[in-house]
Each structure stands twice: as structure tokens, then as C-alpha cells.
Length: 409
Image (cartoon, rainbow, N blue to C red):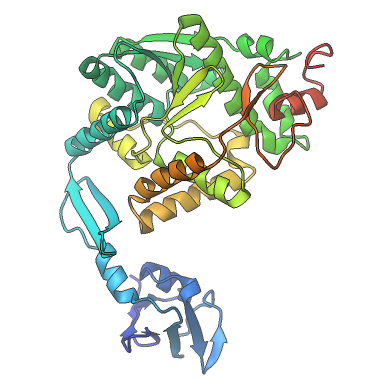
């Protein structure tokens, strides 16, 4: 049992209110603030009238005064958006939004697994219809890894395709760890159960397309030991997308669906905003001869897990991450920030995606260059002059000696 002491940490806002904050033995000031939804950057903490770091461990024999130094009414904000849910529901759907007069509104709805399932399908349907993602009688190719995102997406699309009259096919790229990964087996089995035509794209498709001298499954781990170690994850995703593009040409489907969910896309936007790199439209993205669409844009990963559980009566199986999915940390950090943003501002994606769309409409447009080696199209950044006919992945492959000598010259 942990003893709770209640008299030594006092929070004061700028409205003249004072509140004792409970804390646990050995806890830091920062931890107490986070539990109470108070940003550490918004306060100054003093001990004996001297400022102290919020990372200090609380001494129960001392009195800490925490003063809000920002001008907002923090109590009304916290009370507005952090309601307690006393129900026994499986999920609490939250959304913070602003009324036309600037009033802060909070919506919260306890939901059962079945209600979450219905909501997921409704949000996918909305994305497809509202942004004209799929036309009637059109055939779309789903990139099916076998993980929870693409599996849940395929389950939903197999149902919605009958309702909305379009055709779904799926393909799985035989990438680095497909044959040893449980998600690969899951992909094949799921497609069979749903009656969706499924193709395994062999690994040598990429070896031929990129003119590689050895299999990709050998190249990616080797890259982790080079100066291009931070390219390995990008190369993994880039080659997978290219494999889907080449397969789409064979089957005559020019629209490719990827299972990128809300956090994937919000993290991408954060990366774009912090680095200054241009990012194409979130709703429907034309890349060369192919159109990429993201029907899961308004579906967080947690909802996908509940959706999968409801339909399969089991939880999704996760494979152990590859080394390049763990390091470097920048991508992981953007995902962490995206999740934190959705905790503090649930529904922020509704604002971000539309705002991003409006911003790129004001720009001069997007310009893609085509790699002479692999044939992929790359969004050209205005501030980065084209100094190679190769995409970044092929340029790295070439420098590392993975591309045949007579390719890409």
C-alpha cells in the first residue's frame, strides 16, 4: 500500500484559486502535475521561495508552491475536457471542438465493442464518400501486411464494398520477415476467410525493379551497420510501396489503399511541420500513375484493435519490431507526440487534415521526379534542388554497392 500525503504541494492559478495536490511517496513534482493535467512549462515551482526543477522528488517535510505563470483559466479547461467515465463500457469516444463563438466543447460517449465496430465502419464510409476516394465498380488494391491496421481495414472494406459497389483485392509483399512472421500467415488466412483475392508479391520483384545484387532481406539488416542506418526503415516502406505499384499495374488497379490510421497521418504532419518538408494531400494522393487513399484517416489505432477483437473474437498478434523500426528514434518520437496530442485534443485530426488540405491548395502545387533506377515517383521539395536522377533509397543503395553497376547511370 502506498501512503498518500496531501499537505505539502500547493498549486495556485492566476484566478486566485489554491489547491493541495496529492502525491505519492517518492514522486516528483512533474509527475504530480502530469496526473493533474497541468503542463510543466506553464508553472514555476518554488521551495523556500527559490525556484526548483519539477523533476525533483518531493520531500514531505517541505512545502512546495506551484504557481501558474500562463494567463489561461486552467481549471475551466481541465474541467471541460477531462470528464470521468463511471460506466463499464469498453471504450470512451472523446472529442474536443470549438463552437462558432469560440466556446470549448467536450463530447464523450461510452461505447460497447459493437458500437465501436459500427463507428469504425461509419468513419471509413464517410472518408470514402466525402473525399471521393473510390468510384462505383472500381477495383482497389489493399496492401495487406497481416497486422491489425491492414487486417481491420480489409474486414471493413470487404463489407463496405458490397454496400458501395466496388471491388477489393489484396496483396502482401514478401518482405524482410514475411515467412517467419505470424502476421504473414494471418494475412493469407484472413483473405481466404473474407473471400478476397490475395496475392503474395515475391521478394525478387523488388530485386529486379531496383536492380539489386542481393536480396532485400540481406540488404536492410546490413544497412543498419552503415552511415545509412536511418534509411533502412524508409527503404523498407519505399520498396513495399513500389512492389504494390508494380502489382497494381499487372491487375489494372490504379488505386492503392494503405492502412495508415489517424496517428500515422498526424505523426507525418508533425514531421512535415517541424522539418519544413512538403507533404501531399491527406485525402487522396496522386503519385505518378497511382492514387493512394487512406480510408482509416479518422480511425485511431485503439479503435482498430477493438474492431479486430469484435470481428475475430481474439486480439491481434504483434510481431517483434525490426531493428529499423526501433532506431533511429525520430519517427517513434513523432508517433509519441501524435498520441499525446490526441489525448489532450481528441479529434484534433478533424482540424489538422482539413487545415493541411487548405494550405497545400494555396501553394503552387506538387512536383514529382521519377527515379531512373526503380521507377518510383518522389515528391520534390522546393528548397532541395534535384541533384540526382535517383530517389534517396536508390542513391543510398548505389553508394553502398547494392545496385548493379550498369543501373541508374
